[in-house]
Length: 168
Image (cartoon, rainbow, N blue to C red; front, side, top):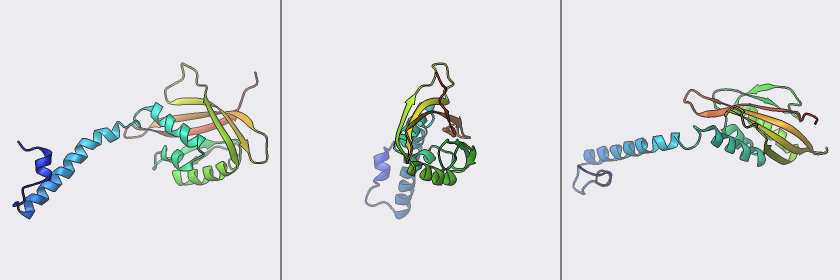
């Protein structure tokens, strides 16, 4: 039985047809070996997706956040600051990217602190969200982030809802 290395590097006297077949087999074996690794790279666990979302939100990166979305479905956004100003909207990734870009231009000093209760569902996180809108005082609210599973059973962003922090 030949190894993958022998298939990838056929003998010098092989025909072009044999070399093409070896190259195709090598490419196919690489795809088959890489496919389970790509699927299990963390996107199948909600903790990993929340980590990507958190780092994107803290960095104010609309590309990272829209990368958490399913490209073919919508996500519900409700943010208290401009441009949504408390209104809920379902957005496709392109719309969300433009909205978040406008939002993050007007917001600075973003901070997230996970305050999810111990018994909360694994697909929902609650954050204490501190930020400073341009020309205003800093404010602290709650940011509720929810994930859902897509048709491939990978976790994707479902909604981002900001609400006033309850008084103590």
